[in-house]
Length: 291
Length: 314
Image 1 (cartoon, one colour):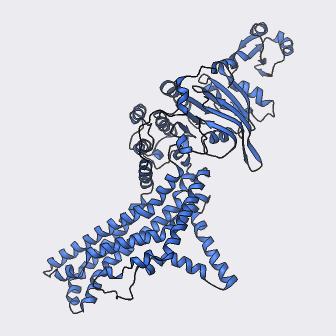
Image 2 (cartoon, one colour):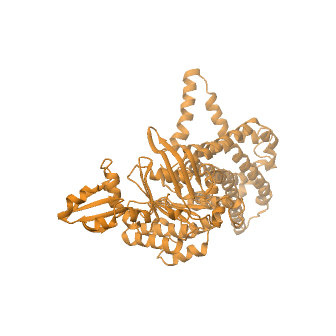
Image 3 (cartoon, chains in turn blue, cyan):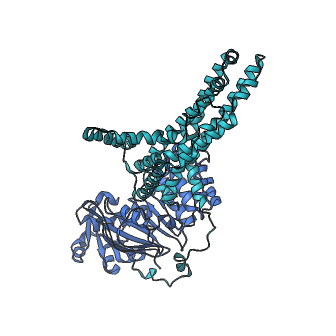
């Protein structure tokens, strides 16, 4: 059974279609990156999956209809919306007490263990913590929940690079195992490239790319073309071309590696480069997004 | 996803989505208990305001004890009914002050209860936990309907006891008898009367709190204005259009009806021997105003639950 399955998901805000017939299937045990420009429908899709908004179309999350029973769903799903949702008046000890009180699958000792590795004091209020510490606290709470699906919407927004790195490291080393599923959206694509098992691009309420990372690596190749071979390389039909320090870098979809190797230096493109190649062509609004 | 890697054989884990594995049992009341505690963590004014009011009242009473021996000597000249009244007045006054404090604290609490969590986006955190919208809204309604009355009861009784001990100490210190004070002050019966009043007020005001919670879950800003101005507007509209005040009288009845329905000060005067003689519980429980109000309260709360389900951060 799939962890998340959506068919023809639609959601309109006024006349804007935030989700426009979105189809999506996420198997258990995957780490999916959902990447898209601002306003592409990422957060709307996640909100529908979490039972926070009503929608049209079919959607099952862990065999349940999220809108019908959000509170039941949250026994098996946890999410971090973004770093700023822990209430500022809450004390760290109160946060632990409360989650332990309402969630039957909260392992308090585990959460305390995570917190022990940080500089967060039990008596502090959230308003007294730095942005990075709030993220650590939220992560400690969420990782101590024995949930099947973890949804992260811009979890590292506004954090410095050390905290961001630490965040994904803890997630992989201390939390992820093959039975859990993680869905993450972020603008800092390059930081999660090695973390993901699956990749989806979303644009204007639809999924425009859906592949596993293995597939991504075998399918897309980037060549820094030797100046002598530029014309030959262009003849092979690259999907994108850019100039770096006067050299042409061409991105190919489904091209033979040996064939490309003759033209220059071949490597796997970054997700950001593929994003620019695929989304930038559709109107150029995506460049700023993919960095 | 459409990769070969995903085409795994069905693992035993797959069935867990349908029948969740054995979960440590969690009694249905636990999320409610923790939700109410959460409210008290966030809104310390719920207990700080009554305590401050009680402290102010006690300080005033302390100053009044300077003249207590003089007043007690003058008191013996009055008839017993007047004596009782004169002695009981400060005690009733404290109760009234704290009941008014509780009302104000309850009103402002409700106006913020479902608004604040949207304003600071923490609703996304609360909604990420397995607590239903109904539990959340009910836990917020419980604060003015149950927690505040119980708290006020405890604070009033404690304050009145301190006042009595203070008076006793002052009288003994001045070599006066405490018998008139202890004889004339029916503290236990006053306490029963207080409990009755608090229960009657909570039930009678339930639709007010329900309305405030509904507005706080609905309005994007200025919850107080949204809660009050429409009611004023309807009253004025009615006055201009039909030259009547029915709606305004309805509002006044909702505010003070618990007193007119639940008490009777006409049959027995203010100085009746038994303070419980004023209570008219049968009349109160049989007044349509009470039951209509409770129906409205239930409707407002149901609407607030529904609204919270749809609500996102502001």
